[in-house]
Image (cartoon, rainbow over all chains, first blue to last red; front, side, top):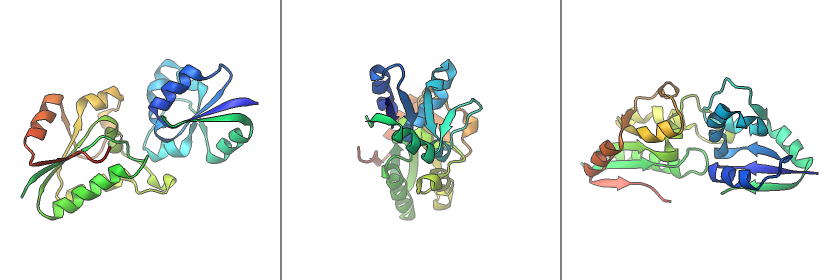
Length: 89
Length: 120
């Protein structure tokens, strides 16, 4: 099974990017969704899933094709992945 | 009557600290103090319009901010550099809030009797 990284904030994103393997999946949630608009500028964002509730709640907007996931889809990703790594800081 | 400045430097929806500072500012305004609020660092994310806290079972921060003039809190400021670093456009913000450079923020702080920067 593949590894899933749950990224909660900017520092978590920085740590995760250094330590993740090529094929690992990643989800941006919580304050990490604030990183999405700037990452979209260099195409890096295509590697990430983004939790849509957290994105919308914060009033963020995008015209780009982000790979949004719902809570249900996030749970599905979690059941398909081992281990799951939470990057809180 | 005192000049009191609240400095908000935390993002709005992870934890309640930022909401608590705003609540405290509103209470303080009722006691006829002259209140200013400065948003800087991660705190500037609070200013985005069209937030929806219901998705997170929370109050909606942007709605709370738009109610501040009712409490006679009209001096809202943000750090120009913090907005630019996060590539936030002025058109994403629809409450009346003034942009301040670092030296203007120093002046603002210098003019206060009390500055509340909140718990870490």
